Length: 546
Ligand code: 16G
Ligand code: MG
Image (cartoon, rainbow, N blue to C red; front, top):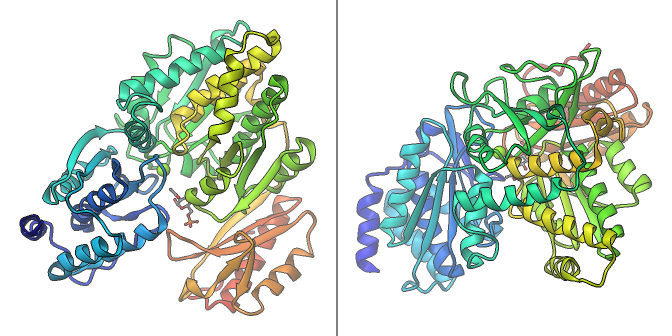
């Protein structure tokens, strides 16, 4: 190990840390301009080796900055079952990232001691990257870090974030989750999709057709690869495939959700079913234009409703008494929550923003459907639920209806990427559900009507003065802010508003919804003013939207 540390010191001087640069492992890992990330990548490689030794399992490292602009990059660690890195290790990541060159070895030693890591344990790390121009050299820096500390690596090259999560899970379950190859991923998902759509009656080519905005990123590439496994069960036209446009520029799921309009690079004709991926293909939103050319967005809430309704009905048909729930955040449209709780009688949980919080809450149920309104989400099945579904699917004594439902549940388990939200996998499940139901996007959209809403940002001198509780739905500090919000909300119908410090940008986010767009806009503005006045706003006072 001494020799290994010398190697780390030597190599780390080739990946020097810019003096004074401080970065934090946030909700989505490290993320900033790609110029500042070389030393971060090397050190994340080191940390992954320690994490692998500690867990005695393969760890994943994904080089991506998701929906951020092309100039940015970032990196996330993936834990053994394909989940996000454990929270205690996030702070190790931050410590390592910010250690000066001469402190690096002692920082490593400290982690080794604290975690009681067996230094002689073998380490294995899977690495993937997105299509950014900086990703190639940055993922090389990751590999350098892994090798400097004596870890084994497997470089998957260009993959989506969810594909890397899948690989890690496959490897650590000795193939039970699937084959840890890109081929294995396509085969597993596409076979399940093909089985699901056997339950759909004859579909026309129009019904099979979908327009996909690939955000000029990795999702477009991987969707094209996947199409050869789909046997014409789905007819896909890919837009923003990276051949001309710039990554995430005026396109992708984040753009469409935030701007509430179609991306550039795609013409949305009435009747077309469209969807957008984000830059690393872990988010998806759907949309269409109606006959009046009015744009309709089907976000994560609509997706969660479609999927949970489908699953709940299958569970009833299969006669399985399993607990199903939908996990959302405060950003979920009030209409979706109301519909799920009061019409569908589904349990709804609300957690803080960030995938790991939703994922964690979903684990408490037999079938946990989680989605953020921004389109990141998946379904988790408990081990007990999977076993029961498996048994029933093989039971020859049950009637046809139960059997059919059990088989569909089984295929759903296989089509969904349970490790993390996955645009490719979510798209296949959504397409299968629409096909089985014989449902158009218009019909899906009409299940409930979104309450008009508005999101704004307010700049303050220190966003940490805002502290929240109740899954970010109420502010406990600064004093008087929540009372002010409550007072404003009372002036509108069906209104709701909350504020929270962003985890990814230096701003406070404001959300408001109400019975009309005018009211939602006015309320969001008034709440922004309250934040500006009570939480140390900087710059000009927020202006009304109209
Ligand atoms: C990160 C989160 C995402 C969340 C977003 C909120 C992960 C992998 N990603 O992108 O889930 O919606 O942050 O951003 O957890 P905000 O804190 O700036 O509003
Ligand atoms: Mg993403």
